[in-house]
Length: 461
Image (cartoon, rainbow, N blue to C red; front, side, top):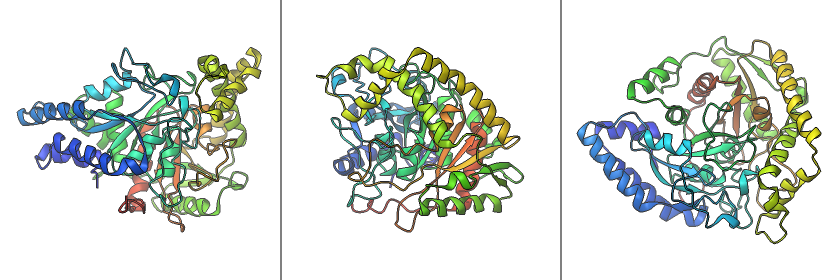
């Protein structure tokens, strides 16, 4: 099994493992597993092995800095890397080589991370199920006998981390595209506050809503990757921040007396029974830790906030990709084409009204929740859906899109495994720039929940 970020960092420090060994393990695992999962768009084996040897020497000479140093990672193939193709999940971009690296790429490399490759994505990140007609749909590691959605749009990142091919990966989140694959694949996904982490060099979908964020196997690992993305430099920076905010695995802070809101009766309607059962267990776990949790339906239903997010995404997405999608000869995913071409009917008045309404809805929501520290929801209303049963006219993003629309930060952390042996997930939404608080609550919940088993299909892959 692939070790997590924190475990590898400790192993590198104490000499029980090395970056070269970690990268070799990733490449071996990819060779063994990806023919079944199909998570990777491209693998940079030679470059990764060369970078790992350089990192080995840095540890041997005492020059290595910070716990992300030497850690293998993957990038969603919407994030640019100088000299590499960035398809953004589109067959029309198979030969487009990036002339620069995204700021996210630079930050992770500057922190000492080792890029192993790029993972598959929904075309231009516009879809929550993770499907892609021309470039391939990754499979959810939790059920290979009855292939299920991996979640999207960061489908490959979620599937690669969940199946143990890489300890962590970057996704992007416009309406849930980090949190949805995290939920469906049984891992952790952090949606960051808009503009906290630069989107420069990431192929855009919606400049108002796009955010990059980490996917990892634990809250601690997601926190370490988050710190690398926000530019923490040395080991003390990491250690001090994690300890201060109660995220470091040995020092999880109390969440007693934190105030949180949970779903009221209205918002529980339409949520799968098994999802609600797990959600209610998660709420009870947090109450046992001393959190004060009050049911509260938001002023506007989450479904309405979800649709409001969709208007902005569609309008801005059409601006960026409408010409391509309007070309009937372009080789594009027909479901994605349909989503983009809905932008044809949106006027400038519609768009400006949506932007203005967003400001008003943000104010109304935060007034309604008062002094609450977090709002708790299931990440998805349903369990992972079999690919042959899902509807591309629907989206699993009922509870995730509002987070982007309201500019909240949020984290999806695995809940209990359902009776049907599929992952569920708890979403913790916090106010802008409160990532430390979201991570702290998630870490406390994760410790109370206890360890989870690997995906059932894991051993048979």
